[in-house]
Length: 240
Image (cartoon, rainbow, N blue to C red; front, side, top):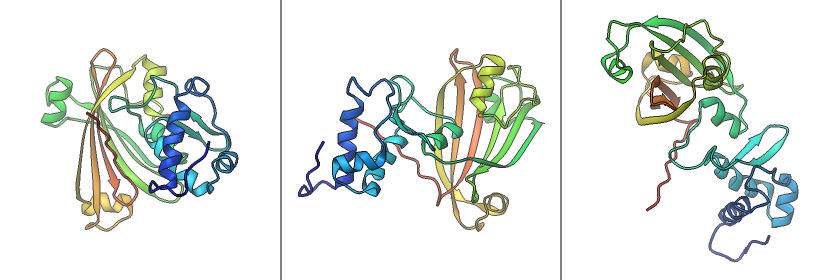
């Protein structure tokens, strides 16, 4: 495994492409651990920072999974990869090696908006279980989530919402989420969101709206995430 330092292609992109080939090999494609970063960097004759750039990109794409204190392994085929595959916030942060902290957690009942009611196929007078979570790393919060749950499902509001959400739904109710339609757009934070995210009201935030359904096509969750723009990048890759 050698890179070309004289190429016009940056070393981290060369390393990225080499890793893509490696994880497609029979030896690695079923979830094998990669060599330790220090060993892999020595084999490629590059710095660990350069190698980490390549690995971070593949982690973000869901092709590699990084576990703190364990190492980096190849994601099993069929679990991640491609536009149709997606992850909960906890899964996304776990793959990136970020320790997640819940700064606030609130569960209550509220009537849905017209958009939410239409998604769930319910009346606007029917109350939904709503969960609000302010989450971030160990230093500061960077995302505020508001989730509405379909009242046709057996969710009571008494569940342990400190667990990763989709793991809880699977273990408690056998609900397996499968699809997520998303909308992403930018806005100024405003007073209330700025106070939660510890930024200025005039700072930009990214808003990520998710319409989540289970493996039977039943709507499960309407989720809105308000992200600090300085802490979140949304990447879309498409091919023809």
